[in-house]
Length: 232
Image (cartoon, rainbow, N blue to C red; front, side, top):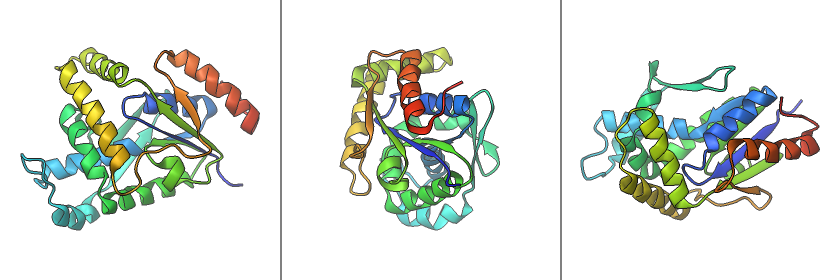
């Protein structure tokens, strides 16, 4: 039987990963975090010196080095996940502002997108899955039976990321975070390869003024109608 794919796209810091994890956990599906994969590649590029202080990317060296990268994402029953880069847990590292500020230009590189898309399509054929990202419903899984496009006001998204960093004891600067959110929106929407856009058949979820519980009620009704499944 063909596996069910729920594709979730949208702007940065809309809570896509949290939302996708919760849906996957409640349905017993596998959660696949495409953003974590792009962040892992970005971290690798930073650590290997393929990005200089001026944020210039040595694309030739990065492309040649992709064969040395192994990315594994482990999902746990409680909905949490951990990302490994060459057998090293890099989950805390890939969520920092440095990686966040560079992941858009790195992920815009066609060869990086091809690399990650191969991983996504492989994992997506193994089990019923919830996959989140920027072009999941438009490029990676265009035939996904359910596509959701998430958005929210940029200031609200910046405040959410600020609160998340502070809750982890990390130093956070709201103005820098807001600027990063706006810049990522522009880069993601204007890149030459697979720009961020809503698939024609995607359902829009603007969660600017919604709680997580509100969002789950919203998607539960949709999943019941479309697949005859109910979030537990």
